Amino acid sequence: MKSFRKDFLWGGATAANQVEGAYREGGKGVSVADVVTVGSHTQPRRISLDLDPQYYYPSHQAIDHYHHYKEDIALFAEMGFKAYRMSISWSRIFPDADNETPNEEGLAFYDGVFQELQKYGIEPVVTISHGDIPLALGTRYGGWPNKKAIDLYVKYAVTLFERYKDYVRYWIPFNEINDIFLPMSSLGQGAMLDEQSVYFTEQADRPEARMNALNNMMIASAKAVIAGREINPAFHFGTMICHITRYPRTCHPDDVLLVLEDDLYFNNTCADVMLKGEYPFYTLNRFEKEGIQIGLSEEEKAILKEGVCDYYTFSYYQSISESTLTFEDQTSGNIMGGIKNPYLKETEWNWPIDPVGLRYTLLKVYDRYRVPVMITENGIGCVDRMEEDGSVHDPYRIAYLRDHITEMRKAVDEGVDLIGYTAWGCIDLVSVSTGEMKKRYGFIYVDCDDQGKGTQIRSRKDSFYWYKKVIASNGEDL
Ligand code: BGP
Image 1 (cartoon, rainbow, N blue to C red):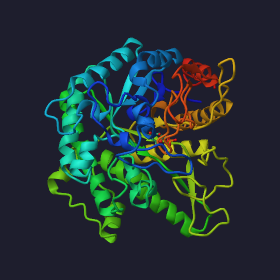
Image 2 (tube, rainbow, N blue to C red):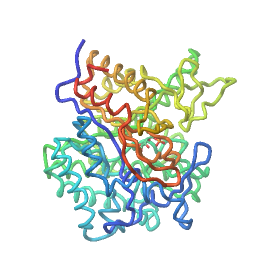
Image 3 (cartoon, rainbow, N blue to C red):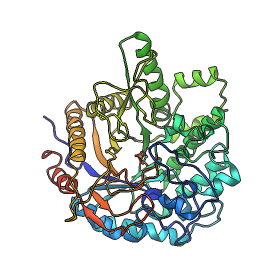
Image 4 (cartoon, helix red, strand yellow):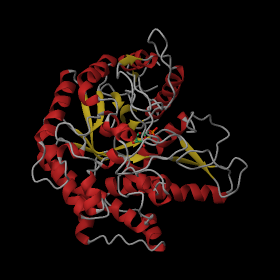
C-alpha cells in the first residue's frame, strides 16, 4: 500500500476571529465577527451592534492567542506539526477597511507569528479572509455585493504578499467561499452571520445580491492570484471549499438526480471558477432560470481565466443524505440540512460521522480537478472534560481522526495526490456556528467557558500524544 508522501504537510488549522481575541489591541479595527453574539446548539447567533460586551466574548476574547501565540506554536511544534493553517484578521491590517496605509502594529504581530513558525520549521498556510471582514466594509459599502470590496481586498492581499513573501508560500484567498449557498447564511431568516460576512440580519435574503457577492469574491481572488504571482512566482494558491458530500437517501432516480444537481451547484461552482477559470454550464443555466444576473463582463471573464489557483483544499466534517421523498426522521437537526442517514452515527451536534465519505470526496475532487489536494479542515466537535489530575481523555476524537486518516491513506493508495492535512481547531477555539467554547476540536485543551471565563491555561489532551505519534510515523502508526 502506498504511503503518504515524505513531505506531507501534517498540521492543524485555526481562524483569527476564533482564536486571537484582543479585538481592539494593536490598533485593530472592529470586524463583522466582533458584533456577533454567543449562541448555542438551539439558539442561532445574532449580529447586533449594541449589546453588553459580555455577549461578544467569542471574538473579543476567544482563547487569547494574541498573547499566547508563542506558547501555542511551541505546543504545535511539540506535536511535530509540519504546517499550520491560520488566517489573518483583515481589520488588524486595515482597521477601517478604507485606510490609506496599513496598520504597522497589525503587520508586526503576524511577523512575530511567522518568525515563531519558522523557528520550528512549520510551513504557514494562510487564509486571507476567514469570516471577519472589517465592519466598515459592511456598514459603509454593504459588504461583498459591492464591487468596491474587490479593490479593498486586493489592496489588503497585496499588502500581505509584499510583507510576508519570504515567510509564506501557501495562500488561500477565502475560507469556504461556497458557504454563500448555504441555508444557514440566510440571514433574512434570522440566522447567523454568513461565512463571508456579506449580510446583516435585518436584510432580507436576496439571492441575486448573494450571487453577485460570490462573483465579486471570485474576481477578487483571481486578481489577488495574478498580483501575488508577480510578487513571488513560488506562491501557491488554493481554493477552499466547504465540501458537503451528498448521498441519495434512496435509489429512486429522482433522489440520485437531486444529489447530482446539488453537488454540481453547491460543491462545484466555486472550484470550477477558481481552478478551471470559468463557471460551469449548470450554474450559469440555473442563474438564468432563477433570474439571477451577475453581469460578468468580458474583462472579468479574462481575469477569472488568468487568476486560477493551483491546488484544491476543502473542509470535510460530514456527509448528508437527501431525498425527494418524506421520511419519518426527516431532519438530522444539522445546520447543513439533509435527512438522517441510518447507516451513520452522529456527533453531539448531529453531524453525521462518515470517514468513507472523505475517501469518496478525495477521489471525486481529484478526478475532476487533477491538481494537488489538501484537507484544510476536518475534526469532531465534542464536550471534553478535564479530570482532577489535569488530564483530558478524548478517545472519541482519536477514533474519529484515526478512521478519517485511514481513509485518506486508502485514497492515496488509489492515486490521489494528497499533499497535506490540517486538523480543524488543533487548539480549542470558539465554535463558529454556535459561538460556544464547549464545542471543542483541539488536541490542546484551553480553560475557558461559554461566558469567556477561565484561566486560559493550555493542557495536552490524550489526542495530543496520539497525533504526535501519527505525525512522527508519517501516518503509519494510527
Ligand atoms: C467551518 C469553518 C470553521 C470552523 C468549522 C467548524 O465551516 O470554516 O471556521 O468553525 O466550520 O464549525 P463549528 O465551529 O460550527 O463547529
